[in-house]
Amino acid sequence: MSHVEEYVEVNVPVRTAYNQWTQFEDFPAFMEGVERIDQRTDTLTHWVTNVNGVRREFDAQITEQLPDRRVAWMTVDSEARQAGLVTFQPIDASTTKVVLRMNWVPEGLAEAAADKLGFVKRQVTGDLKRFKLFIESRGIETGAWRGEV
Image (cartoon, rainbow, N blue to C red; front, side, top):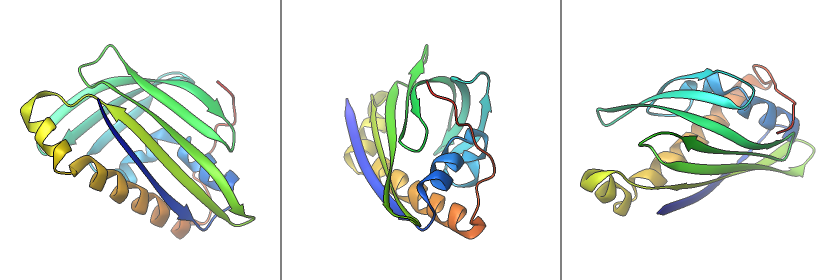
């Protein structure tokens, strides 16, 4: 199992950062390699990804969601085995620290090599930087889901 943990500070209130993160269908706007996410239910999402020419489709279950604090997930019934947690920590009234932790099992030699070379860590870092640009350039979220799981 592999693990990555990265964070970014965004210049928006914690509520704005959290609300935007709950808009899974907007992830392709800032997550490289994510072609599409469909929200099937309050707790089930369907992902279509294409990373270095490897296309995958899988479902992810939201296992925990606490407004303004955290969102946790894990893949279900899929070759792409991963789980993660994103937390939102207010630094002050207009700044939030977003921390992303992920665990996954690389599939095959190519993914294992990419993992050893730091590809996933760089991708997560880039995705968080793009999230920062996305939410700060807008100043407001595109929507929100404030329910708890």
